[in-house]
Every structure is written in structure tokens, then in C-alpha cells.
Length: 133
Ligand SMILES: [Zn+2]
Image (cartoon, rainbow, N blue to C red; front, side, top):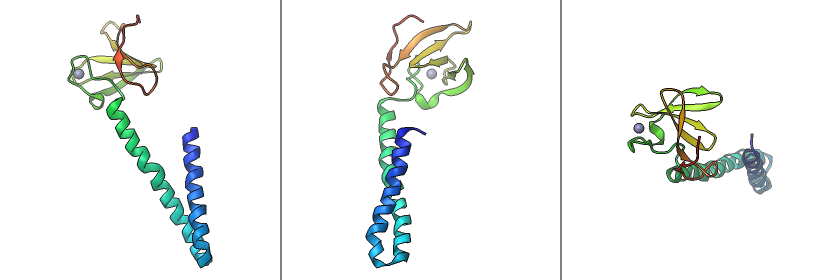
């Protein structure tokens, strides 16, 4: 659970408290119903922009770069294993890749890696990786 999840839960709770407080003037039944209504409204307010932002962000900065043949997008990769905590992907062309932190490298048949793409930060855009392995 990260800080954003905790803030979202606190926000949803206070939406419940706020709407419950507004409806409390109509009686105790309204107060309890208002709390549930407020929680529902809070959940919608938390999830809708988050869903939208996540989709927009992934359009700008996909989870995986386009493959080196230029044919496969982020969704076209298949996770086929792990190697020392790093995820192994195969694109539809059959090329294998290994994701090591912010780097996305081609995994050769002999088990060695060659630099392909990298990010400067976790959600940044993909750019050509020119560093040595
Ligand atoms: Zn491909």
C-alpha cells in the first residue's frame, strides 16, 4: 500500500463523513445513508481520473517500447519467464527481451544482453539505450 492508496482511502472516508454531515439534518437514517452515498461518490471521484490518467499516460509512455522490428506495441509482448528478478518478454516477432530496472534489453540466444531502449525515470518515455551492458 503506497501513500496514494492511503490518501485515496482517507479521501473516500471524508466524502462519506461530508455527505453524511449534510444529510444528518434530515435524521439518523439519512445520516447513515449519506455516509454510504459519500463513500460511493468518493470512490468514483478517486477512480475516474486515475483510470483516465493511467490510460493517457500509457499512451504517452507505454509499459514496454515498440519492438526493434517496429511491429509490436506494449500489449504485444508475452511475459515468458524471470531471470534473477528481471522479467523476460517475447514480442510477436519472436525476439526476446529482458527488463532490468529502467533498461529494456534484447536477450540473445547465447544468454547475453544487448542494450535496446531505456527510461531516465520509472514512468519516463523510452529512448535509445546507448550505454554498455
Ligand atoms: Zn516484434
